[in-house]
Length: 171
Image (tube, rainbow, N blue to C red):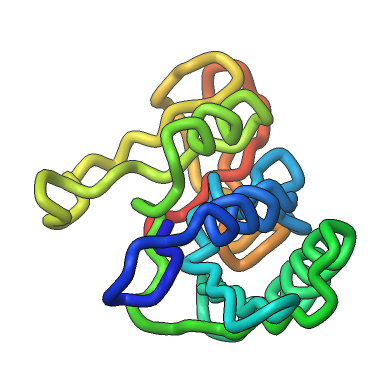
């Protein structure tokens, strides 16, 4: 995550506030923090008690951005920061590669197949149609619906254990 201004290193206060904001849980995937999801892009202190937080949604128009912003504001207010503004940053766009390894592990543990990582050096996603079942590990799965509980996920079912599960789609 980037903090501070583009030309200076983050201050200890910016790093601390980034940890606090990053610890906020995602409202749609409460097993992940915003830092693990990779949507928190920066924290900038603009003066005593004035902080700006940069947030990139998983996709343009994501309905959870408002809840994320409110939760970040509340977390920083609880830490004594009276003036918090959360701004949406669309460039660079969020990618499923922004999800941390810990976040991927938590998704699988929660029963959601994590997105497949892109190829080397941010190249294309390796062409494989296999989506691993988070329950039994089988790759014999079928698509039930291109959309699940959120637009970011697809609904699949495992042919081996017959359990349905969400798959966090690659973006």
